[in-house]
Length: 444
Image 1: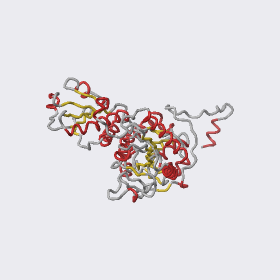
Image 2 (image 1 turned 180 degrees about the vertical axis):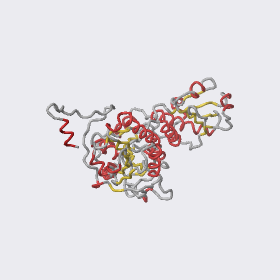
Image 3 (image 1 turned 90 degrees about the vertical axis):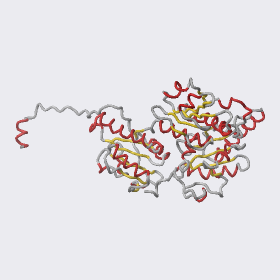
Image 4 (image 1 turned 120 degrees about the horizontal axis):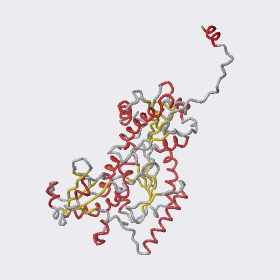
């Protein structure tokens, strides 16, 4: 199994250009970016950056690679062009809200507010967009607008404006804001005289702005002056500064013991957010586009074939869909796609995945890049599916090639209306002229 599943953990001792799965190497003009060098190379840079977030197994990414390299060579010395293996470095992809591949972002004057690139995937289109963004950046500088954190070094002279998204809390305001909140709170307890707190301040402020944007305010960064608000400092046993604690509804606060850079803080905040985020969408295969777009954009797509609506009714079908939704929630950090279809609606797809003879409901996990799949052999239940997906996630289980080496033709069908099925209406047969007594005798 391990040969066809991309690992999210690289070998620590290998440098990026030795990575088997990478699409770029040291000989390219594309700069390989990782959580280790991203802050220094991109965030603290005065240059304009175009950054592609990709996964080595993604077909669209593979097709973009030669164009991206060509653009990087053309823009050398003018605009920096980088690439992040977001399958290997999921925290970095998550930090910038990457949900599909490839995602391209432009880091201009304000490095903490990257723009999404929506243009074409040719080198010409990429270069045109880069030069347009560069022109905007230069014009901003000419007009005296620095663009905020353009150097990645927030100056203290700029005053409190940089901390606009850090929520100041006090003994009086803490409980009503934090304790019963449905949101997640990361709270820094600081002392104004503490040198480590002063070093953390610009990182905390920049992270607060990014986290507010990325999580739509569902994760909040706050600060408490523990020298003034001694009730809180005493309640939470604050002994040193800065101390950061995480508060979630219904749970005891826990200490944050991660790194003190904005990228470390953002990564943890987004992890907390994804723990509380909705599960991936569960889509019915009603067209070829639904299947292709879902399976091309994700490492694995989990496809269920549910019994015909006449066999289960709406309540039976919904119980199967509920099981899938629970599993999608449980495995949402894997960034898998989730699909379902009705038995017989996509018979060619069933055949290519060896499902027909298994009975319904059935489930297959498909790697669209390798065109291989694994079948659920256990029960279609939370326990059975969990065991199946757990084996997949650690690279175990038996796989087979998709029949024909590619997805078969997908038929466009009407989406399920959520109702019980109806038997087709048959023509009435006039039995008035048939002698039923004689017919019964003949049959017997």
